[in-house]
Amino acid sequence: MIRHLMAATALIAAPALAAPADTVLLHGRIITADAKDSVVQALAISGGKIAALGSDADITKLVGPNTRVIDLKGRAATPGLIDTHAHILSTGLGELNQIVLGAARSVEDMVAAVKARVATTPKGQWVLGVGWDEGKFADGRYPTAAELDAVSPDNPVWLENTTGHYGVANGLALKMAGVTSTTATPTAGTIEKLPDGRPAGVMKETAQELITRLIPEPTVEQRQAALSHMIRRLHEEGMTGFKDPSIGREDWQAYLGLAKAGNFPINACVLFSGGRSMATATKALAEIRQAKTEIAPVAGSSLSVCGVKLFMDGSGAAPTAWMYEDWNHHRTEIAKGNSGYPQIDPAEYRQMIAMFINADIGIGTHAIGDKAIDWVVDGYADALKTHPVKDLRLSIIHTNTPTDHAIATMKALQRDYGSGYPETQATFTWWIGDIYAANLGPARSQRLNPYATYVKNGILWGGGSDTGVTPFPARLGLWSSTARETSGKVWGDAPFGTAESVDIHMALKSYTNWAAPLIRADNSGTLAVGKAADIAVWDRDPYSVPTAAIKDMKADMTLFRGKLLFERKP
Image 1 (cartoon, helix red, strand yellow):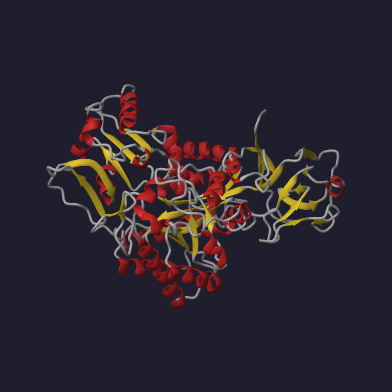
Image 2 (cartoon, rainbow, N blue to C red):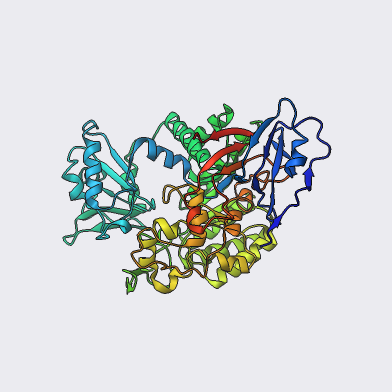
C-alpha cells in the first residue's frame, strides 16, 4: 500500500470554479482512500460534489460570503463507510418491534426477557425476539421450547438466532405449525429433537419456515419506519451506503416509497430473494425487471437494484454450511457425519445463475462452506464463458473459508469479467467468533476471512456486517480486519491467528473504495474531484491510533452529497 501525504501547496480542483464553494472543510487530515491513499488538509464542496482538495491556503480561496466553513480542528475525515451486506430493513424491524437479545449471556437471560415482554403483550399475540447467540453462553447450549413455555404458555414465541439460520419456538408456536415428533424434516433443514423424539424447539434453515410462515407480515409503513430509523443510525456511525440482500416485493415497496418521496439520504442497492428453485428464481427475475423500471424515473435516486440473492448453503454457526470435511465440535472434536448441505440442488443452482447472467442481472450468492464456495465460483466462471458479459459484479457473500482453487478463480473472474468479489464480514471473527472457532477447528480457523491472501493475489473485497448477525457499525469491521479477536476468548486470544490480518489502510479500502462499486454507488467511495461529497468526520485518526482504539471511533459528522445530516453534540 502506497501512503502519500499531499504537499501543502497542491490543489486538485475541477476546472476553474464558477462560484465560491457551498461548503469547505479546513484544518484536518482528510483521508481520500484513493489509489495513492492520499491525505490532504482541506476540501471544497459544490453542488453536492467534491470540487477541490488541497491545502488550507488553497481551499480558503474558495470561501465566499455564503460558504459554510467546517473547521475540522485537526480531526480526520474519510469517505462515508459502506456495508456491502447488511439486512438493514429487517434489523430496523427487530430494533423497533422485537426483543433484542444480543446482550443475553444465558438461556435464563432469554427466558427473563420473554417473560417481561409477555407481561405487556395481549394473549395470543406473537412474541418475537432476535439476536441470541449460544456461543456467548457459559454452557453453550440452545434454549428449549419447554423453557419458553414456562413463561409464555398463551403466546406463540419465535426467537431468531443472531445468524438468522435458526431459531427457537415455544410449544404453542410448534403446535400452531403442526410440528410433532412425526413431522418430516424439510429438505435442506433440521428439526432439533429431544431424546424421546419430540421437537426440542430449535428449527434450522428451511425448517424455520414451518414457524415463520405463521407470523404476521409487517406493513409497508412499519417497514418504512424501520428503514428511516436505520438510516439515522447509519449516519450516526459515519456510514453513507449499504446493500440489503434477500428482499421481497413488499420490502421494495417500502424502499421505493421513501425514494420517491425524497426521504432516502443514503446510497443503497437491493438484492431480491431468488428462492430455492427455477420457479422462484423466474419469479424473482420478473420482480427485478419491474423494480428497475420503477426506480429508473426517480430523479437523482441514490437507490438501485443490484440483482438477486441465492443461497448455496447454510451457516457456520449452526453448523449447516456445505464443507468438504466434517465440521468440528468444541474446537477439537469431529462432528462425524455433519459436513453440512446445499440449500439449492447444485445442478438447479447452475441453471438459475445461467438464467440471471444471460439476462445481464447481477447475483450475490451466499456461500460459507469451502465446498459451497467452489461450486459458486465455478458456476460463475462457466456461465460467464457462455455469456461473457462484463461488470455484473457477481459476488460471493461471506466467502468464509475459500480453497486455493476458489481464490485463483475469483482472481480470474475479477480480472476477466469484473465479477467474483467476496463480500465478507470481518466481524464474524469477533461477534460470533467463539462459536466459529469451535465449529471450524484449529486448522480451518486460520483460513477464515483470508484478507492477506486476497491482497497477495490482487483480489478486491467488500466489507460488511451481515446485520443483524453482527452489529452494523463499520468501524467494528475496520478493527476486526486487523485484530481478528473473539468476543469471549473462549478458545484463547487468537484462535484465528493474525497471518490473514490486514492493516487499517487496506481495511478502510474494503469499506470505501472497493465497496462503492459493489453497491452500484460508483460516484462514491473515494474523496476525489467530481465524486459525491459523502464524508465522515471522526473523533480520531484511524491511521494514527492503535488498532484497539479503532473499535471505539465515534463519528462527529456525516455528510451525504454535501449535506450535513449528522453532527454529534458535545
